[in-house]
Length: 115
Image (cartoon, rainbow, N blue to C red):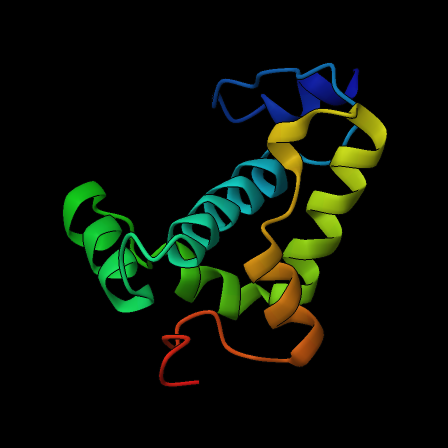
């Protein structure tokens, strides 16, 4: 029995992803948090409004910035930096806003004017 078969043993479909740059969930979550940080950096919306829009509009249990806080801004920053280093893809370039907050230990959910 191969590993794929052992995961599919209970009848739940299994998808094999041939990728070596981290787990799919890490990539998706880090990208979502990074986009939220870019929006905050550009002052398109406040951190509270970004999280509210995502929870109400998309039905996510947490907004991207609250999720980034829960996982740790430095963790998200590390994931993005590693993906960009391996893939060289600019879409994984960490937001300077995220990098600054991670380095200073600041929350992603607090408005910069209030921080």
